[in-house]
Image (cartoon, rainbow, N blue to C red):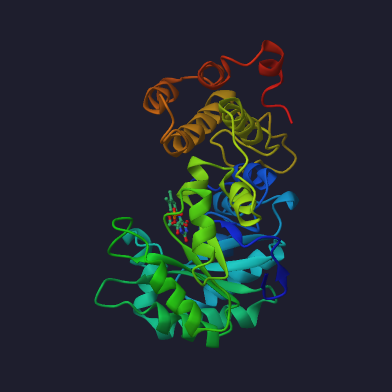
Length: 355
Ligand SMILES: Cc1cc2nc3c(=O)[nH]c(=O)nc-3n(C[C@H](O)[C@H](O)[C@H](O)COP(=O)(O)O)c2cc1C
């Protein structure tokens, strides 16, 4: 399976999720296996072009995540082309364009899903980006804006003609946001209407669903919320695809994932006080980082993940309450250890979180 010249080792992809699919999370999912591609959180094209530190942080990735796609949003063809050059300059394998975000703050600026209402303009953006860079340019879109305008097939053909190398489609309209169900039949129909690979997205919670969707006529499957609930889902989907029962995941392993996540978030050499990196030249990051607000940033990241990660877990809502009440990293670690690792022999507990 290839996107342009980029080889994907598996058809299963970590879907972009703002605030969630940071480099630490993506690395941990990648280490579990079965992952063919990771996509960054959406990043502002304006922020990239202006070199705003916070934006550059969102686009940060590590070598072990490859192949890696950076998703950008924006509505101006020239600025998007310039942003694509920045992404290429950062060494990413693929640059993806967000045409699916329904949030008014984004849609207002002719970006996100509102681009689907202006297919000619959407194609002009892709054309400008394709001219500007050598890496593949891809698009993530929805079924359409609303039920009266299900134009993903038209937008898909236009961006293909403009040079896009692949498309991912979340099988809902912008109006639906996350209500109802993703329409995989519709997505398969779009896949049949273009020559480039089409990935489907939406509602895969179990590994068996990921494989069933793959067999519905798409080239690959983007998994979003399912990965937040179960970071092993792509590895388990690979098991199912290869005819093995999905590898079971123990409670202790789930606990270690969270502890590892904390360590990776903390293990950022440039991490500054507010959790972003804007260290003055010549200044050591540690000098610039009062621990308390850095810890707060990590705690907030873990809380956000836990709101998904604890879904469907026995005692999950009590755990969420305790995680949300933790005021320090040590309280947070202890809460995780008590919930997930209480039955694990002490030596194992002592090693938890260390690779
Ligand atoms: C918290 C959250 C943040 C998201 N952020 C993005 C984003 O930045 N870019 C994007 O293209 N899609 C974004 N999405 C949409 C997902 O990538 C995915 O298409 C959608 O959630 C449907 O797939 P799922 O049911 O597997 O989650 C986001 C979804 C969630 C739940």
